[in-house]
Image 1 (cartoon, rainbow, N blue to C red):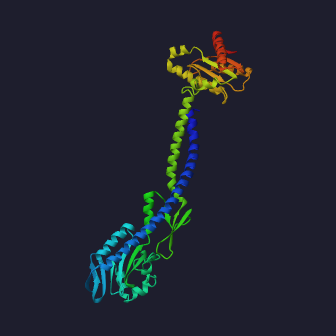
Image 2: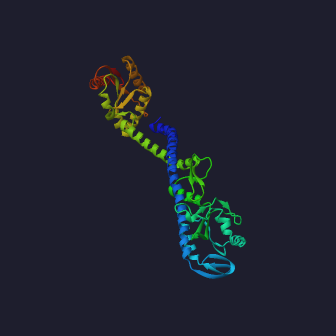
Image 3: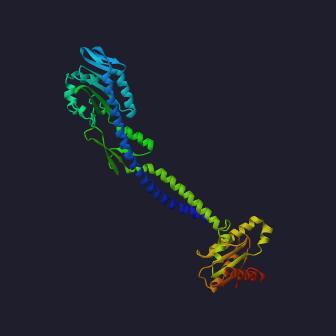
Length: 434
C-alpha cells in the first residue's frame, strides 16, 4: 500500500474527528460571541426607545409654539395629516409640519415600525391623525369631550407626569391587537401639560414587531442568531422596557441556530486543518524518505546511525546494475530499484529500518536480531531475488552483513562493506556476514 493510499484512508477518519472538534470549538465560541452581543443588543433596544421618547418630548415644544387656524366641523387633510374637528368652528393648532418632522425622526430610530401618530386636545374638540384611518375617525366620534382625560390619562397614570422631573413622563403600553386592522401594536403616550393643566395628549402607535425588526437588523449586521422571547433557549436575558411600568422582553439564543451557523465554518476549518496536516505529513515524509523507494534517506538517517552502538546490519547491492542501465536504459534501471525496494520491504519487519544508501545500495538495520538470525534473513532476501524476476529481468543481489555490540557505525559499516566486497568477489548473488 502506497504512502498516498494510507494517507487518504486515514484522512477520512481524521477529517471526521477534526470536523466534530471544530464544530464543538466553533459553536462554543460562537455561543459566547452571541451572549456578549446579547447585552449590546438589549442596550440598543433600550437606547432606541429612549431616543423615540426624546423625540416625542421635543414635540411638546413645537406644540406649545404652534400657530392656530380656524377650521370648520368635519375632516380635513393638511400636508398628509388628517384633522378631525367636532364643533362647527374651532381654533385648531397647525401641527402638520411638526408631526411630519416627528415621523421622520421616529422612522430613523424605529424603521418601518410607526403605525400612527395622533395628537388629542383636552377637551377633545379636535384631533390630528397621521394617517387618519376610518377606524380612528369612528372611535373619535364616540369620544366625549373629557374622554382623553378619563379613558387614557388617568388609566395610564399620566395626569401628574409634569412632577416627574427625573422620572418617566411618558408611558409605553403592553402590546395589544387593534380591533379594526388586526395589527399588533403598543402605544406611547406623552401628555403635554401647561401650568399643571393637561392641554394635549400625544399618542404614538408603534408596531409590536419593532423589537423583532431591530433584532433581525442586528443579526444581519453582526452575524448573530439572537431571538426575542424564543422557547427552549440555552441562554435567555430579560430586558426591561423603559417607561413601561415594569414590562420586560427576552433576548435569547437557541442551540440549533448556533449549530446551523457553525457547520460551514467548522467544515472549512476542518478542511484547512486536513490540508495543512497532509502537507506537513507529505513534506515531512519526503524530507525523511527517498521518493523512489520509500526507504529512509541517507542524509536524514546517517546522524542517527552515528549515535548507535549496537548493530545488526546488512548492506544490499544490486548486481551488475550498470549493465542494466546500459542495456535497457535508466528508466528500466529505476523500475528495478523500485521493485527491489518493494520486495525488500515485504521481507523485513515493520520495526526494521531500510535506508537507500546509494543508487542501488541499501542498508537494513534489525532491532534485537541475533547473529544467526541475521544470516538467515540475509539468505532469505538473496533467495527471493534469485527466485523471481524484478521489473521483468533476472536480478540478483550481493549482501554483506555485520553483527556487533558496543561499537561505532563507522567501524561496523567498514566491516559490512568489506563483507559485501567479499560476496561480489566470490561471484555475486552471495551473502557474507563479518
